[in-house]
Amino acid sequence: MKATRWYKAFGGGIREEKYYHINDFEEGEEVSGTLYVYNPLLKRVIREEAKKFDKKWWMEQELYNSIHEVAENAVPFLMKF
Image (cartoon, rainbow, N blue to C red):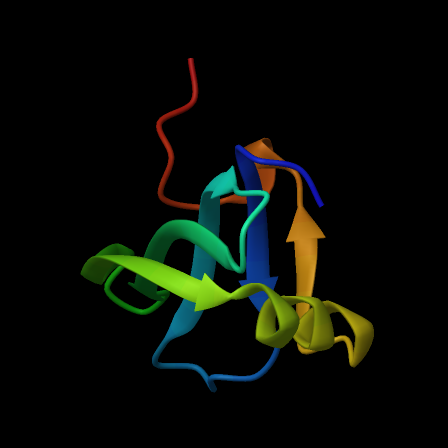
């Protein structure tokens, strides 16, 4: 995993999708990033918060395919020029 990557959580239903923008994959025990909760029906972000995740938890999420990396142009709420 590398910093400045986008990840999407599986599940969430039709009312919300969770996206993670990883800002820093520190050498310590934490992964820092921003969680975005996006509502595809309203087509807007309904919540945004800075988070720190335990590195072990984050790597388990990747291992069990609970989250997956997405291309930046696949994130629906980013402005595209």
